[in-house]
Length: 230
Image (tube, rainbow, N blue to C red):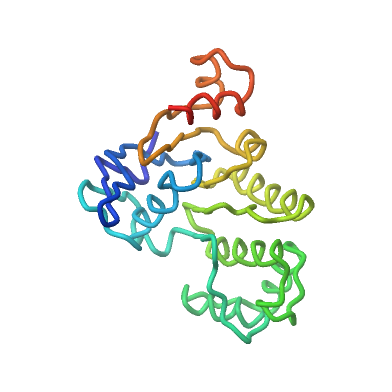
């Protein structure tokens, strides 16, 4: 497999608390990787280090993507839309940051695909609509790697279903995806590999089939409860 990003011996402390402990894992091209674990296990911290938002105290991130920032799309838990601007204007401003020129037809196609109204203020969108706009912006430059941090958190069932389907479609297009989630059905539907992170450590890393067979469980829920009882 072609390795896009390699994390080697990553450690991170906040004050005296060790948030990440000797993290080692690869992001391989074409995978859909679910980063799973309880709140406070270090998932968002690890993503921020992979993105260069935070610096690890020790260890190394090796990136094998040319012009990395132009080939990665990111949806964080809170996307800072341009306040006071509508959906269309936010698309235009983010596309300018990506040095893209979008035609009116391309914008209309995107809006139709994601079911968004061009004239609605971004801050007035529902939670699900804001997630859809964030994912639209993350994917507009057709990146090689997509990172989603809890893309369906706090959404109602219909919005969660719609956003999950959007990510599933991206996975079917052979995009490389790293996402965090507490929704084990979502993990089961999308992920080709699951990384269990608990108290800053990777406790398990493998496909659903491999891990269920290893522990002799018949569901991800039972596996999750077992591993996070460490």
